[in-house]
Image (cartoon, rainbow, N blue to C red; front, side):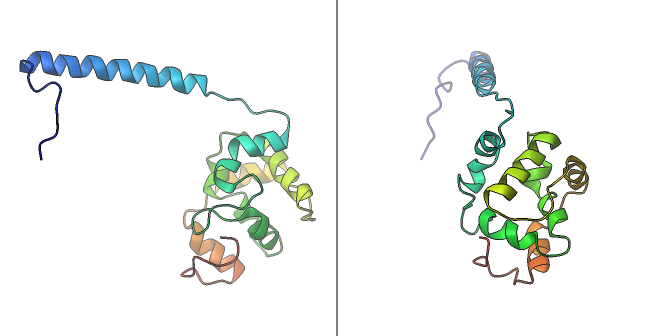
Length: 158
């Protein structure tokens, strides 16, 4: 089956030029669309969670089964084991977040209070240190910390 090519009937130089012009126009439209979606962090940690975290972790921290951890289940467990706090602040979603370390600290402390997790409040320096040491093998590290099988995707927190 042949793929329809709108430029196939045009002389070769004109077809290539048309393709370049259309590509340039589409790219410029995409740039404007992205600028329209540009967002800035707020001083409200709940709003920042919704804007920057809930897209993957869900509005109530439920995550996506077998893909994104359920924060409401896994964060309390991580905060009870040695190395768990370090892990929590070193995962890709934290390390690569658009939020700066101050806003991330506020989000972590909001979740700690909202879900009554107890323990010491997170500090900005703790978040910054975690961002400097990203975890590359997230599933294996998480499984080792929690003492669960890495081969079982249905384990607690997923």
